[in-house]
Image 1: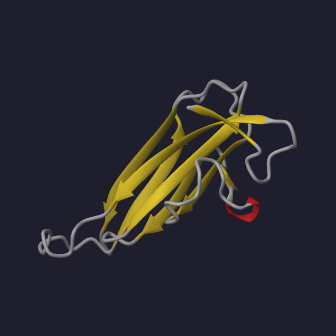
Image 2 (image 1 turned 60 degrees about the horizontal axis):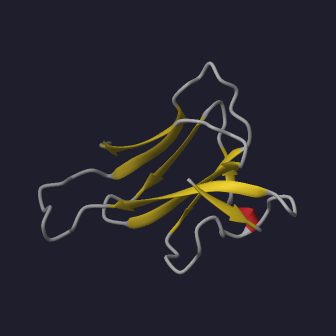
Length: 116
């Protein structure tokens, strides 16, 4: 990850480590046979034996936002070492992940089609 200073909502003077994942849904024209009602995006802590401190995610569409610069109210903490949200199978979104600069954690991002 990249070190980021002044990430909104972090304590003043704190450096956080951030990563950005681009999530591209299906093309409506190229994937006419895709019938998924939604995609399930999940971030999970891989090494569950290590205690995970203060990992937050921001799920957004704003490509002009700098890495780790989501507004303070848009950051969500991992609950029980994971975070899950649905999205349209045809949408394109960004997932910013930040953690305290001293944290060395392995996170996994997975995307799964959901059918109802």
